[in-house]
Length: 359
Image (cartoon, one colour):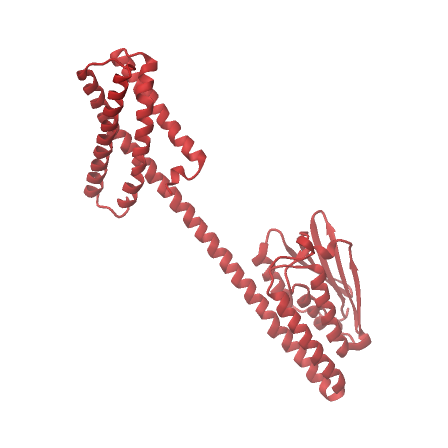
């Protein structure tokens, strides 16, 4: 479809310009031959609109003769040939229209006056077609620029989706490495616990595969996955691991990226609870404040232990996933105060539609 007629707004603007052209030609006829203004309008406005249709052919001329790849001589000869042909077509249309108006007694002009008027149309038609060519070249440039922007955006979206998928895939080997180490530690001292942990691990991995295939999940499903992870770790830590939760009513329906909390909880156990002989408590909280969902994972740490430089794999993974999803709408903050380490996630509070997030 021609880009000028693709939308009603462009079409109205284009033919509105040709109505103005018809008005100007009518004024020329009125001032030159003293024709009645309304009769002149009746003669020129339909011709102007007809020539507007003819000048739409400038799109194919501008596509056939691109400015950056066409020799100058070929470009000029092509423009001139197209302009002369279009103007000749306009004169032919004008001849038929003049005969019709004369027979309808709308205009009164001699044959000589009609020939002069048609000659004026031909002379005016050539620069008007050149103006149409300029407009079409600008239009093609604008369309090409928008297409390039669209492709860049598609490339960025594709790259971000690929990065998110890679980061999700990174969770599995990282989690498996830690879990297998835990199972290995239990095999000698607690074979039954190692067996239960293997069974729980299988169920957990099946669930992570199901959730990981979706773009977003309700927080309730993410929390259910975290509870399953806690069940695995309690085989190893027993009463040394305590979990406290505060989930504000309504927060569990908000959509979150899948597998977002589990690496934070894993980080809290590995770098907090596991380092303390007496174990500790992990506190999960979710509240909605000013249209934002705030998730926090807090764990006890050994006050005498030195802070490790940098971040663990889990924190780095979550931070990079948030940046890939939307750096403006998301945030991850970490803070250590005495014997507590807290990670706070800020996400848009978007409720799941129909109680379930879309894939």
